[in-house]
View 1 (cartoon, rainbow, N blue to C red):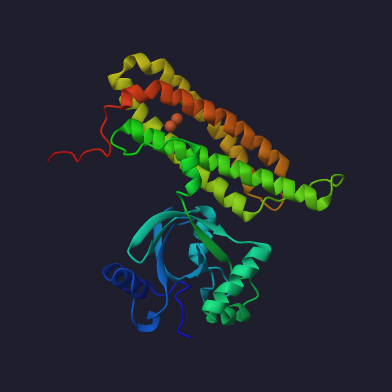
View 2: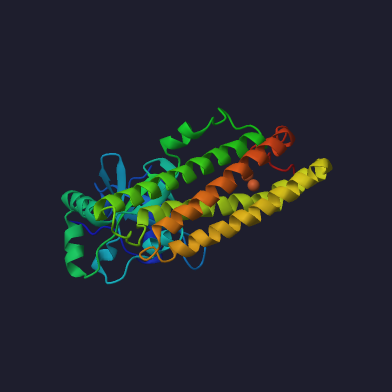
Length: 315
Ligand SMILES: [Fe+2]
Ligand SMILES: [Fe+2]
């Protein structure tokens, strides 16, 4: 089979494939004729800068998969290391582009999905045979899954900053609920597997880690933006809201402390205590739900007249 561009090829080659992909609605000729390609943009683990690579991809029903083959090289590709540090990625496929959360599959699921990838593109089996590392299989999940809609009323059209705030809050609530459901299911499955008397084995799993990290990074981004832009603007036009803004900023700091406890646990997921993780998640959930509700109560009237998206400044 033709070589799939799963490692980091020379930058100029990469760039020409990316340009052809974008100019031709996601189609690339030459050695990639007939293969399904996508462009994956990750955030550099060390640099924090965007990093785009063309990758072969495989579908398994609704799932979209990429394999960290690196053409059978001994090391994982850069994009894989990047998505472990920053699970939120951007996917371009065909003419579509969307934000996604990258979740490496584990255990039996990884093996089943890898077998599926090999059945579609046998070259992945050859790459696996060349290296002692287990080739990662990464599921690219849409960052706006259906469960968002069941967790609150999304504004039908976002025309003001108030709508935008509610939209982001709805996403955050849903994402947090999803991480909690996942962690509870993980704990219950372990307890059932080991029996009621056995102490619970440590470890959380990559799926929970990636979802929790994506949630924490989105939350931090949202609070940083509020502290730097929204709160100062509200304070300028509505000085009577200053006490509420002070309280909201203090709540941001409290939530950031819980978040750093969660991130410390996630840094060593193989030895993390699942019960402690769930306890921290409960604390986060209580604090955040109260915070979001208070913020909406206080700020939505003040933000309802601020247009969104912001209009371009006149020259
Ligand atoms: Fe906030
Ligand atoms: Fe907020």
